[in-house]
Image (cartoon, rainbow, N blue to C red; front, side, top):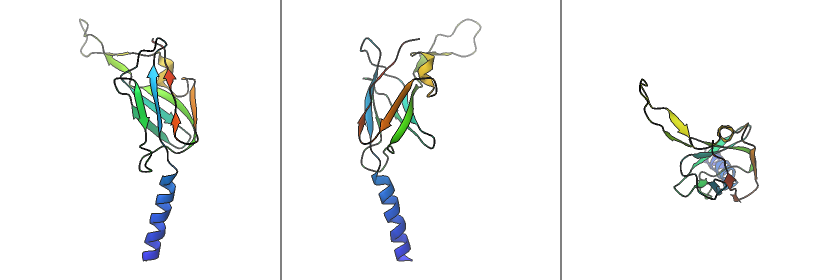
Amino acid sequence: MQRLVLLILLVIACGCSDRVHVTGYVKFPDGSPLSIGEVRFVSEKMVFSGTLDKNGFYKIGSGDGANGIVPGKYEVSVERASVDGELKPGQEYVESVSLIAAKYTNYATSGLSCEVKGTTKFNITVEKP
């Protein structure tokens, strides 16, 4: 029984050690950062994401094997990049206003892809709506 538990732990540890981290910035063509949103890396089997900070920086995974990204080919999207609009007369709720062109919010239409082979830096430039 102890050998089985040890084998299971070894398999889990080996599977996690292959994970790496991806970092980068999301900016507009003028160089200003997108400071709200989330970058998502999507493959056929997995989705990984990282939140943007005020400088447009994101990090997916810690690189310590605990919560990294699995190497492979990914389609990339930038999501939740919106702010609340103004409440207009007759509206019951405030609609959100996207800060980026709609194509970037879906990995199938963003035109963004990245192959992660090891620790990777992937900067993204997005356009305004």
